[in-house]
Structures are given as C-alpha cells and as structure tokens.
Length: 309
Picture (cartoon, one colour):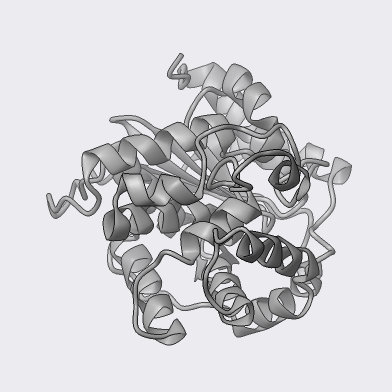
C-alpha cells in the first residue's frame, strides 16, 4: 500500500531531530555503532489503509527488543497463558532491561516480566519447533504475517555481533537454568534469541504491525484474526507497563499509548482502534529509548490527544 509524505509530520520530525545530539547510538552491540545518530523517521498506518510518513521510512532496522512483544504473542499462542506465566511474571521491575538483580531477589527466581532480557529469553525458550532453524522460521513467518506479508529476513551481521558479545545474557540464562526456568542449551537459545532480535524491517512494516495490535489482533485489510484478542490485550498491557524499559511510567504520563522500543532506535506504537506507529531514531537516551523518537511521540500525543488515559 502507498504511504504518503506529510508536511505536518515532516515539521514535527525536524523539530524532534534537534534532540538527537543529546543521545548516542547503542555502542555495546558493535554492528549498531554504524548507525547515523541524526536519523529520524516515522510512519503512521490507519485502519482504512491510509499511511502517512516522514523521513527515510524505507530504511531497514533490526527489531531488537520490539521482538519481545511479538514472541510473547507467539509463545502465548503456542503454550497458553498458564504455562507462560509459570516461567515469567507480570510486574514491572524499575531496573534496566538487562539487570540480573531481581532474579536473585525473588523466588522462584523467575523474571518479573517478559519485556526485560531475562523474561524475553525465557519466553523465546517456549517457542515451539523441532530445531533452532524451525523455531526461527516460525518467528519470522509470524512477524511477516503481522507486517502484511512483506518478505522479511534477519541481519546476519547484527545477529553475529550480538551473539559474540552476549556475556550478560549468557549469565542470565545460566542463572535461570539453575532454577529450571530455562531447560535447553544456552548457546542454542542465544542463537535463536539474537537472530530474533536481528529481524529487519522498515518503519512502514513496524507501523503495519502496530496497526494489527491497535485492531485487537485483526488485520483490517484481510479481516484475518492473526492474534487472539485476549493475547493482544496481554501484550498491550505489558507495552504500557514495561514496554519502554524503566521509563515506562514517565512514558505513560507524557504520551500514554502502548509502545515498545528497541536499542536499534525503533519504537512501535499502538493507538487502540485508530492506527499503528513505526519510528526509527538510533540516538538513544540513558534508558535505551530513542531520544528524538520519544520527543516526536510526545508532540504527536499532545497535538492529537493520543493518550488512552
């Protein structure tokens, strides 16, 4: 479907771009250090098929932590709510996304929610399949359906870069193995997880996925129910309470929509029953969120009353 440039959106992007100088790209993943910190783009997909955009929306980015919402939906479809939440909890942590602290403090040593790294690793371990490649293909195909059938793949460079430097994620996995939260080979799980995070798409695809969540799991163009409504409700709730790392509370006050960010600079936003939003701005704040992307969403929320609260 065509996506049209919007003068108003372009104005907002130019205003928000001023904040990129205050952030920096994710340099702890070597492949992401190459991104231009001045980039900022946005696409908004409406349920009637109208799409408006600003910036280089065709540029591909990797999902990173945005994939956590999508694999949560797939794991819930695979295993059911009871099984998934035996392994992960429901509560925000208030800690950074890669923290190990709460794993040691809480019994039975399960991650507090699926949006932190420990929780996402536990969720990915529940994705069904006969092999790593089979499970990755199921994740990729699921994400591709949500994006409207656009052919998607993953960045081998980013996946390899993350896998080779995933020391803390390995520590999280081994800790969870000790407590039977994870019960598979750690290196194989990390291979799957890093490839999941390295799935590539552009802002248009990201907005298209956000639209499916906005429409309670239904693709508004094919009328196919891609995700059960109850699972969408769970995912959107986690996006509100935990989706923006340990800045979720401030995000809820200032912007007030379900959203999930990734350290590539992507943000997927969901405005229930209205539209999906895809943003790319690789300059991050200290919490790991796109600094200009947040400002852009704040301006949009103020001008168009997007908050669900």
